Structures are given as structure tokens and as C-alpha cells.
Image (cartoon, rainbow, N blue to C red; front, side):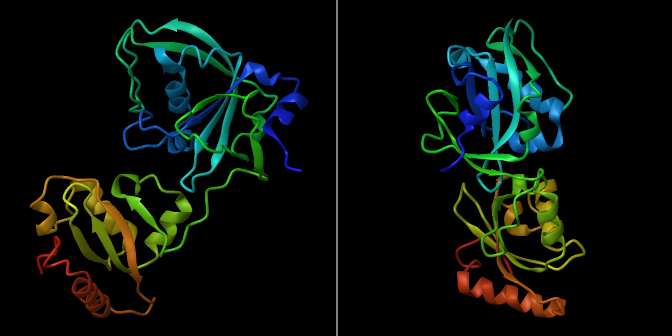
Length: 277
């Protein structure tokens, strides 16, 4: 029989009717960062992000406690913290923050005072639940939604690298990838594919430099084109990147370039894409 989140609340002496479940996945958190990345990399900025809420959420958030979850790169729903919550009034001044967190105009949102409650915070970063259907319903009542606990880990760990064939990411997320993923990508050379969500064009490229896939992709993140003539001819876009083929550790640059040429022929990326050579 699976463990339920409400049973953990009961063991801690907390009534489920007093708890709201929050699943953070939106793009409001900070420039270039998901709520998960913000929680992982900058806890003060994550707390600030949670404190500011739209008036529209006031009735839903009317509870003594918040169980805050973040969505990991693998799509898991991970406990970020358990808080005592108090409505602290309406935002009367623009609240700017040095961590590049987005903020709402004055008078358009509520401010909440959040205090970590130690009764469940030993599970933060370790507890994974099944959120179930209705992902758009990111605020739910614990007493109406008794979530199944999927895993309680020994400690916080990043999701495992999905493998080269399954790796897909927008370029805007490359810098915030888990450290272990970046290490794998920096150690691997080969052929990759960029696809533009605006024009539906594709570009085949090769990673042969010192930092391999990750280093090459970061050049696109920095200037939008990585020096490529075809990409320079288009407006900046958040290209999706994936890996077509990984070169062996002994492969020469000429061999990798030959692989790149073959993929250009297969995908006809010169005729129907952004490759110009």
C-alpha cells in the first residue's frame, strides 16, 4: 500500500485541511531560470518568488501552511519546502530584487510571509510525489488531493542524464542544466541539431572544441548565432537542441566533420535549412 502525503502531515500533527499544495513550474521565477533552478541555485530568490502572488490566487492560498513543490528537469514533483504562511498585505511598491527575479507592478499582488516549518523540512529535496492529472491546477487543497509518495531519497540529487538519444533542450536552458549533465556534455563531441520554433528551419552542426557539445551550445547562448552565417541571417530565437550522433573518443576532427556532412545530406539542411556550406 503506497504512502500518502497526508499521512506524513498527520504524523507531524498537521491537519490536511490547513495545507495548500503548490507546484511551481511557471516562467515568472527569473530570467532564464525555472522555479527548480531558482530553488536549487538561489534560495533567497526562490523565497521572494513565492512570496508575491496574484490577487486571483488569494482564495486558493487561504491556508495556514504551504507545501511547495518544484518540477525537476525529469518532470518529477519534488518537495522544495514546507511553510507556515501568513497574508502580509497588498504590494504597495515595486519590489526589485538583485537576483533578476521578475516582479509585479505596485498594487497588483499580495505579499505573503513564509516561515519554514521544521516538522517536514527534513524531506525538502528528498520527497517526490505523484501530482496526477490537472497540471495546470498548480494550487490544490491537501485534504482533497491526498498525493501518493513515490520516493523518499537519502539526500537531494539531480536527475540522471537521460542519454544522448533522449536529450532535448531549449538553448535558454543549457546554462542551468544539472552539473552532472554539463560534465557529460563537456566530455562528448559529435553532431547536433538546432531547430527554430519560429521559422521551423533546422541547422546541423558539429562540436569539436575543448568543451565539446556544451561549449559549442554556450556560444549560441552568448550571441544568438555562434558565428554561423545562416543563423545570423535570422532574428534571434530560442533554438531547440538535440544530439544526432556522438563521436568516439579517438575520432579526429576530419572524421567528425565527415559525420556532419553526412547528416546535412540526410536531413537536407542545406536545401531546406540554415546550413550554408
